[in-house]
Amino acid sequence: MAEKTVQKAAKTSYVARMKAAYNDTYAPELQKELGLSNPHQVPRLEKIVVNIGLGRAKDDKKVIETAKNTLRKITGQEPVETIAKNSIAGFKLREGNMIGLKLTLRGERMYEFMDRLISIVLPRLRDFHGVSAKAFDKQGNFSIGLTDQSVFPELTFEETTTAHGLQAVFVIKAQEQAHAKALLTKFGMPFEKENK
Image 1 (cartoon, rainbow, N blue to C red):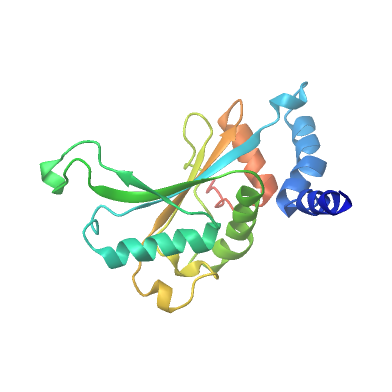
Image 2 (cartoon, rainbow, N blue to C red):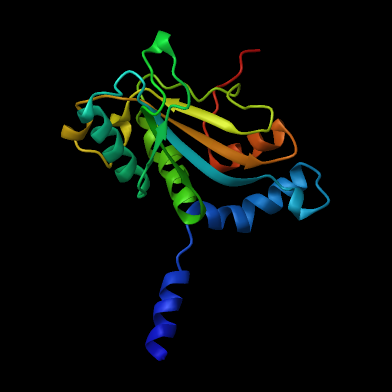
């Protein structure tokens, strides 16, 4: 009985660095800065959807396997194949073809992935001047695209010989776009400086 209690305590004791910072510091600061009366109005990160489009390489098994391996290594989850719903002759696409991979990160894994992306991956990009502040949609969700997977330190050189891009969508629960941007700024997202 005591052994089970120890195992349960060991499982629940770990909290991601970014999650702890959000709960302890960022959420109260955001509530004060944005003038929100209710703590439930404070913007928060709900999930991160990572996807890879493989439309051009849909028949190349090597590219598909490389993309699956990339997502497995950088997120710690198994990706799901996305299937074409319609046939489009112009793109030589048939209904039922595999056209990409995606996965959804929540909880601790979501915060861990965001931490690595902001702290390690983005600073490794060549000629990086910050992410675009225009990448928000009307709901306040933020999209970031990377053209090459080799910036992730989890991947070896052999795993990056077949280059492909990926996209990460930060799904944020916020009342407006400015609140979502304020949240990501707190997390340390390096937005490019606006020219005045």
